Length: 174
Image (cartoon, rainbow, N blue to C red; front, side, top):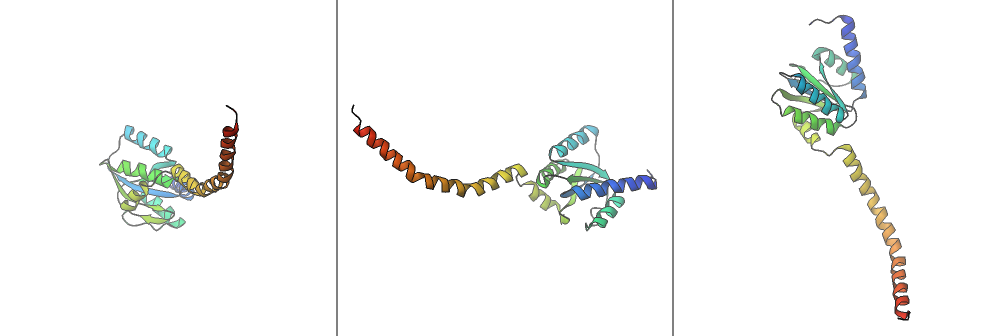
């Protein structure tokens, strides 16, 4: 299907806008897709804070290289289905690796902050916990010393109160 110059320009503007907003991109090759699979994949990507789009390789590569990505030759071959991670790269990487288990899809590679990732690195990224879990762990790590300090400071007063209470009970007439 031939595109007019204005259609190509609009596509390139769309790619540029998505590349400017995303933290990571993941490129898949696909051989056959049907609408139920496409709908399911798009829904999973949205839930992970990303989007998936079929791209025209030449236009996408041109825009990506203008922005500063170093596109490898493997990514330009065949049909490309690109995932754009806008919020949590690890969550979308998990969706991508789950998609790639289907024989209709194969991971070509990806980029995290413009650094190339091969399929193995994308799999490793997908094994990371989601962003909310990472934030909770970090917050717990930061708060642990503070809560221990509060317990340590309160311990002498609590111990003294227990001694006074025991003394009061011992002297109280039965």
